[in-house]
Amino acid sequence: MSIFWVWMIVLMSLFLTSFLFAGESIELTGDFIQGGLVRAVTNLPVQSVMLDGDYILHADTTFVFGFDLDAPLHHSLTIALIGGNKLQYNFMIDDYNQGE
Image (cartoon, one colour):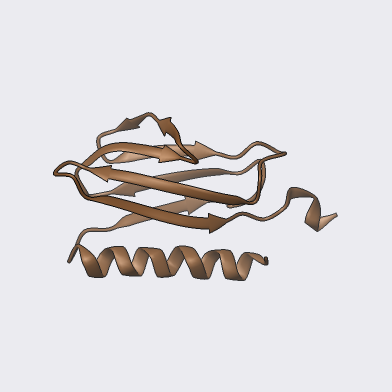
């Protein structure tokens, strides 16, 4: 899957999140590639964050996660909100070796 489709999935997820939570959003910036690092900022009341079932430490509304150089290409990000709602994003990252 090309980087174009990865960004389309991410943008659609952000659009839907903004639509569902009226003015509340999650912004993901960084490199969606093996070996990449992603930073997330939100104004949602985050209780916990998981990437592929593993908890990620977060500071209020900011968290960071990365991908190993040999990480699988399919991932799932789950954000549990205070109050019980959960957001789940399924996405793909680019293969590090694809550019060689």
